[in-house]
Image (tube, rainbow, N blue to C red; front, side, top):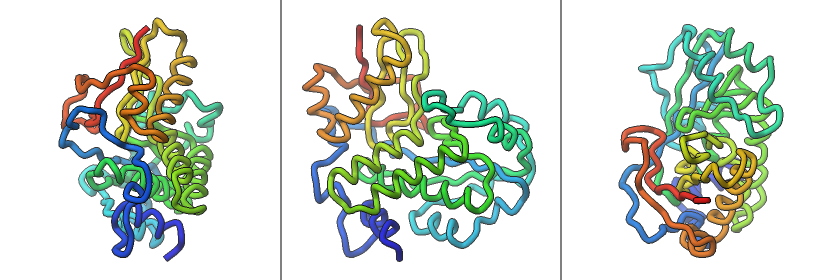
Length: 281
């Protein structure tokens, strides 16, 4: 068993001789004075391919899927094109990172011939980062196996293949250098950039979606505070602070409060059981 896989299995509590990272160091997912929902978030990964071989992952990817308790959804996976994919990827491309996708990635979506869905198990809050890192590893292995496009359905975010590889490499580098807090933060940030979508423009706020996948509440920034880029910078600042110092300390330092009110129903994959932080003008 390689070192990175062992580290991730330990962090997910799936390696019998070890404890999760959260037991060894300050938690990056501490509660914020309110009892969270009992809902446990899940990853839904969508892969597109050029033929039906996509539906039968090679040994390396199949082993990672099985080791971490992920499963292939045989109900919705299909060995034929899905006519909705062009529109779906079109609204999901990450527009924050420069050149997050290319014309080649768009062509791969348009020309796909098969669709594979992979689901994570329901994740406990203190293990979300480990499972998200495992999800990134699955993405990387599926790309190596021939997947031509990838989307994270739980938050509705897509990157081009090069960007997925870059994010997976960042998480892998963080997981390979040890198990101290800095490593946890490096992995958590790579996973957050990979699987969360921001900024989504609502009536009053620029919003994040998908922070539950790294055990954090969403961040909504009032539009009156500035443009979308300023909102993204503040979202990153607060997310990094919560990951490093905890949710309670970050709320206290920035004089913010947490609410459970949100537009997503509890059976929606976008529902965040850890709540929402609204930053007003």
